[in-house]
Every structure is written in structure tokens, then in C-alpha cells.
Image (tube, each protein chain N blue to C red):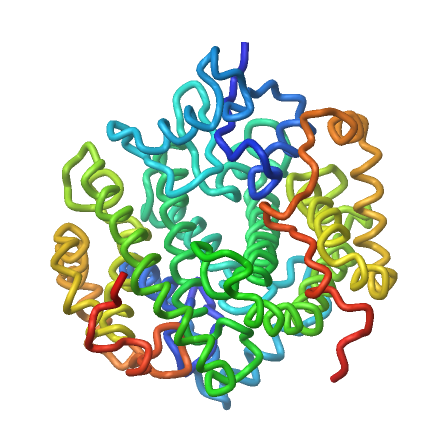
Length: 249
Length: 249
């Protein structure tokens, strides 16, 4: 018996992965609908069918969305806000849950910028049709945007009065799980950049390592439920976007 | 006596405008810090100074952020979530406030895409240094993205079981105010596109007109507090990005 149905593309981590990580860490049973058996009503066709249902009062704009017993919730950060409230993956007090959500929205901004390194002109076009623009955008991303976001998240861990090495208080929140995924994804997509620069963000790296050791996360990462990174998702490795040499001024 | 301090750039509507509209509609007194008198601790320098304060436990990544008596809240959609809870600008029940926030996050996605029509390569570069990329991205935006988002919002108004002409239930939410701002901004930035296509979204246009007539909004729009659109904000009018002819397939 599943309390949750996750609706997301079946062959990529993508934005759905932030939800998967939260559900896995919470130990909340969920059905990953589009990865299920077609015979049992699963598969990508089931996802597409549910997306275009006309009788839904709260239609999602795009996957991922989460179906609970009585709600259909879209937008990754909104889904995490719900999971945070219901599975103690964020503080219960207003100041705490707002701050956790604020961090998640900034992570979402970074994810959008990662996506646009390979799709600066439009999501509807192939990477191959926007390669020169992607090269320019990725350069800006490597030299300006990544350091700005990473310095910020490093500072947030430092600012945490609990001094727990986590983003918020002294217990893991969905924002920590998402930040773990950011580091994982960046190491896949921009391995040379990360090798050159990640030692400058020791608290980020330590948070990543701590999350990777959390028993339920470690079990998830080792399972078949964790889809491998690939060039259809958000974090894509294109060697030409991650040159060996640092970007000069 | 102000309950709120809004911290945002003083010369643009930008993302701060979504917060201004919510505070204005709620009738909540606020100080627009960077637009205040330098002699009284206002002005852009005050904004920049507060951004880099080292002793804040919840540092914002960027403006806008809202200071309440005891919180500093960043990320536009997060600020609106707070205002929605405290000023009845969203339903109080979980299903209702989650749906309102989901809509706001989709509006935020659209705002990000509007921004990237003139800054497809990077926010740190001038428009003049990314004009050819902007032309390509804006074409994709006009022909694919705008219709997709507008059809979606039109459908959401239709799906509302209250049949109120609003997005959620039968009372104005911050999402309605933000959607009003989207139509305002698009008419400024893409007047030819809007003239050709907006009649295809009658519920969107009707919602816009209704919000414009709300007494507090009408008073705000007529006041000096409403900054005019300009080419420093999110919605910029560059004639070359809004051609007279429809985009052919």
C-alpha cells in the first residue's frame, strides 16, 4: 500500500530526484508511476495520460507532481514543502520552515541555471542546435554563477547557529538532501570544474558526504531505484562545456 | 510605524513588484527601504549594506527580501507565502495554500523565462553583448513558451470550481495579483505579440482587468509608489524582440 504516487519521467533523475531523495530519506513508501509495470497501469503513457486529465482542479504545469490520498501537488519545491511538513523534514516553527523553503527555492534557481547551460535558447530545441550559445552560457555559469551560489550555500552552513554542518538547525531537512544532489550532479556534469574548485567549499563537501552516509540514502543510492545520470536530465556531461583549463578573467 | 521593510532595488519593478502588489492589496504598511530618504537610513546603500551583513542567520541570496518584526524572508514566492498566511491572501486550508503557492512557483518560472529573453547568456553581461542569442531565445519564448504558460493559466482559471474568474476559490490571492503583473509586463515588453494573441486568453485578460479595478490596486497604480516599467527590470521593451509579423512555424 503506497501513500504517495510520484509522477515523473521514468528515465532521468531530473527535478523528480529531489522528491525521490526526500521520500527515500523519510522512509515513505511511494510508487514511481512511470517506472511501474504497464500491465499494472504504470509506464510513461500513464504519466502522460494523468498530465492531460481534464477534470483535475489543480492541474500541474509539468512533472514532477505528487499524488497523496487527497491532493495532487506540483512544483518540486512545493512538493518538498509538503513532505517537509508531513515527515519532519523541516522545522515545524514558521521561521524554520520558511528558511528551509527559501534555501530550496535558491537551490531551484541554481538547478534552472544548470539546465540552461545546455539549453540557453529553449527546452524545445536539441542541445546540438544551441551549442555555440551553450558554450558561452556555460562559461558564465562556471566562472560567475557557480562560485556565487556555492559561496552562498557555504555561508548558510556557517551561519547556522546550531553549527551542525547542516543548512538548518541540527536535523537533516529536504534542503540538505537537495544540496547533496547538487554536488552529485555537478561532479557528474562538470567534473573538471569541481575537481579544481570544490576544496574551496569544505562545508558543502562535508554536508554532501554526511548525507551520502545516511543509511536510507546510502541504500537508495546503491539500489536500482537510483537512475544513473545521463544526457537527458538536468545535469549533463558535455566535455566541451567543462574544459580542462580554468576560465581566464 | 511600519510592520514590514521591503528590501529591493529602488528604480525597477522587477521581482520586488510581486511583493509590493501583495502588500498594497493587503493594506499592510511597509517601508520600501531603498526608496527611502538617505538621511533616514534609506537609499540603495542601505539595501546593499543590509545584504552583506555578516551576522544574519538567514542571509538572502538576492533582493527582494522582507523584514518583519522578527524574520528576514527571501525569495519572492516565499515572501508571498508568508504574506498569504498572515494577510489572508491565500486560503487557510492546506490544499488551498499549497495550490496557490504552486501557481506562484509556475508564475516565477515564467518570470525567469521573460528575464532570459534579454539575458540568455548571463545576468552579468549587458543585453548589447548577447543580442543575437536574445533574438533566438525571444523567438522561442514568443512562439512556444508564452502560449504554453498562458494556456495553462487560462485553464487554471477555468478549472476553479468556484467559477469566480480568479485562480483559487472566490477571493483574490497573491497569485492573482502576480498574474495581473504578468499581463501588465507582457503588454509593456511584447506589445505586438500581446495585441495579436491576448484575445485567445479571455479569462486571463478578464482577471487582469478585475485586479486593476480593485480599489487599493487602482490607487497604487496611480501613485508615485508604482515605478514605471523600464529597460533595467524584468519586463523590457526591445522592439527587435517583438517583431510586427507572427513567427512562422
